[in-house]
Image (cartoon, rainbow, N blue to C red):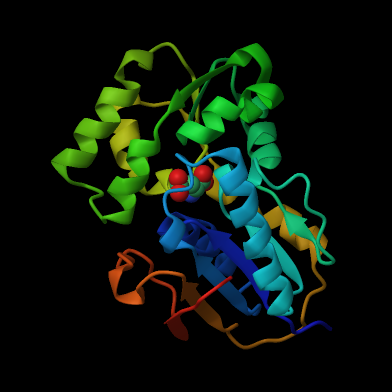
Length: 247
Ligand code: DGL
């Protein structure tokens, strides 16, 4: 029995799509989610900046005494391979690429500018992959503009040219699941592999069940102003939401 919480982090609200799925799979676990909005967006930062941010977030969770850390962010995952914390560290890219390889012949990878430039998805997928830099989608989601004409236009301008040329699309940024409708409206009926839904099987292997029966506690911490988080779409109960200062 291990009642410690599970730490989950992203640059902002996108990672809550991961948390949402994890709460569905592990309703009795306690979660601490870190929305590092002070440093959002991650996807246009340099490798050196991102390595420092990721290291600092992992130290933060070690100090919080969590039993596992989930990197609910593809961009951060690409900068995490040098880190080996005491507790299990769950990364999002490899399981997502594996899921895509099971169904896709020609795979469109939509991810942040950094993730695409790093070539990490292409390394896992080989010549089946076409990468498109979509950091502009991140701001749309942070601003809560899903479903608007602005969102439709930004998505259309990035993906339209691939219509009919791919059979599978990877949402290689945890913000992009919230734009699934806009993406489907342009690309039509293709396989969608949302990276946000890749974590649960790995977390199951990594943690011991805490044997509790009640609802787990959900804490959302942010490095920015909690009042600015656009999370009305997140329907799970939140027990606490507050600003934290991480150095
Ligand atoms: N949600 C993050 C990802 O999965 C990145 C968003 C950002 O650029 O901050 O890559």
